[in-house]
Length: 276
Ligand code: GLU
Image 1 (tube, helix red, strand yellow):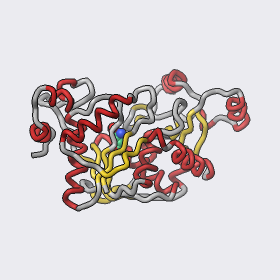
Image 2 (cartoon, helix red, strand yellow; image 1 turned 135 degrees about the horizontal axis):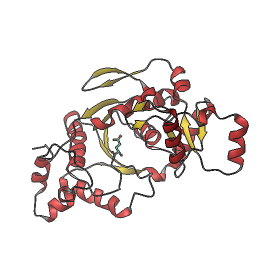
Image 3 (cartoon, rainbow, N blue to C red; image 1 turned 45 degrees about the vertical axis):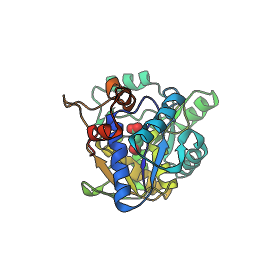
């Protein structure tokens, strides 16, 4: 069972088509099922018209998926349960910092360790005394929930996963620091929702771009803490344009929609996405 999990924040481009076709090809080879999941927890950026366009454009490309489509915003209760379990393990803490607070703290420290997404969270709220946390919560100050990664990683001990391209990989979840598992504006985060969903949907092979390879270290730890299954992973290469740049939402001419409107056939679009 594989899945394609786009976020409805824009039209699908050739890079998305490549990712969807990789997952779909795997299922055609091994006879499993191909699922579609809409990762729409970012309410400010996701739009219903992009959701409808994803369904339409994938069908145009010639892909068929097993119903139902899972829309993350319909399943917030699943993420709340996972957060409660993590809370029970004592590995979460509330973080009241604003972006500006974090930047100021990093600047004051002179140098900050960097992770795959930039400077790591400096741990300000992890060190906050319990009474202060309680007071800020009582005052209704908005907060995120962060994973105390050092404490969390010590619970299961060393972890590995199997990656189709790299073999057995040893998980090093500390690379991202204390990641956010519930944001201030939405009661989950990418890392939490994707890990819970892959388990609940019975995904046995996660195929996704190699830009998300580092995130798998965190996902593997969450699986161990929550008692979730660990799928196989295949982090595929990212499709680039003729200038060697990754496709992005700014490349309007290379959305599937634009290709279709320009009279390209689905077979041509598949070839452009690296599949003949
Ligand atoms: N929703 C993510 C994206 O659009 C993909 C998540 C994943 O495949 O794990 O980049």
